[in-house]
Amino acid sequence: MAGEPQSDCLFCKIVAGEVPATIVRETETTVAFRDINPQAPTHVLVIPRVHYPDAASLAVGAPTVAADLLREAGEVAAQEKTDAGGYRIVLNTGAGAGQTVFHVHAHVLGGRGLNWPPG
Ligand code: 5GP
Ligand code: ZN
Image 1 (spheres, rainbow, N blue to C red):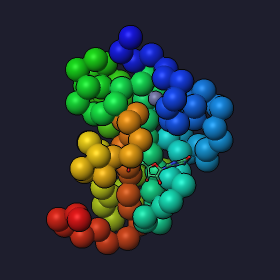
Image 2 (image 1 turned 180 degrees about the horizontal axis):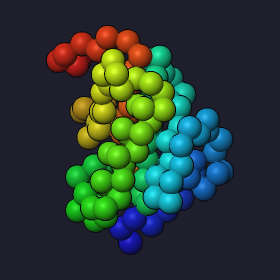
Image 3 (image 1 turned 90 degrees about the vertical axis):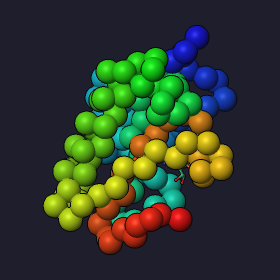
Image 4 (image 1 turned 135 degrees about the vertical axis):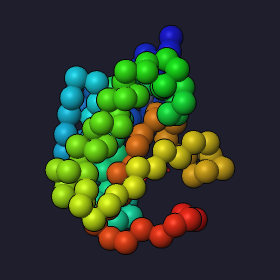
């Protein structure tokens, strides 16, 4: 069923505490943790506790949680003090766009200059 935990999903395992992660914030609906391979001084992933493969399917299936995800991305940026210098929220969607984990996650990147357009 949409939103149910998937036994083969790495990020469902992080939500369940079965795979360790450096958690920086948690809410009833979201978990934020440091990316294992950081691309910037701040590189945090914000995920919903529910399993949806990408941002658009989360917005369709659980719109309030999609809003929670964006709010939490902002809270992470504030907590990491990247909000003043600007930060980027990235939601890679599909393998061709670089998505490798198919449990929606917002990358929060900051703490350095960020080029536009991204590669
Ligand atoms: P994507 O490429 O799907 O947009 O992003 C997946 C992100 O998950 C990558 O930036 C990758 O470094 C990160 N990642 C992959 N495996 C793990 C893990 O086991 N723990 C953590 N904290 N991050 C992971
Ligand atoms: Zn999952």
